[in-house]
Length: 133
Image 1 (cartoon, rainbow, N blue to C red):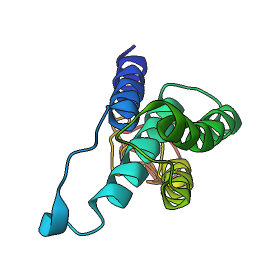
Image 2: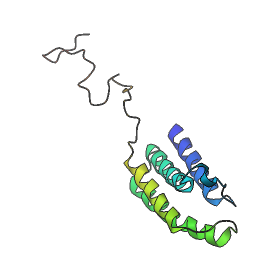
Image 3: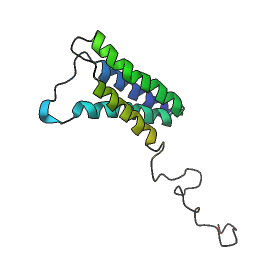
Image 4: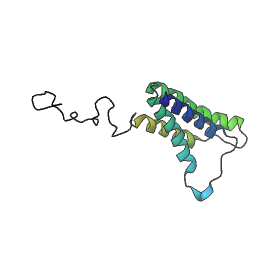
């Protein structure tokens, strides 16, 4: 439930950022701010979608199409916005980043066993495999 809520918030934030009538002017304050924002909103949306259990292929297709479509819509429907191929490249980079990030937090403890991922267990079994507890 929490993962789906986060995904919904990420998609809503993406829509607001991409379709706000006029982008904020950051000027020289933050170099490449527009590119960073595009990578972030697509990357976070894909990553939270994966955590919500949506198949990766579906996320890549949907957000890949949205990357190109959003720039066309900005260019044609929003007076103070213009479509930009560089933004599409940044969006696709965000999709790749969101696809590559681990679905879960690194270093989490398993709720069932209390062990770290990749460990040999809780350390309570002896050499013969019997539980010492």
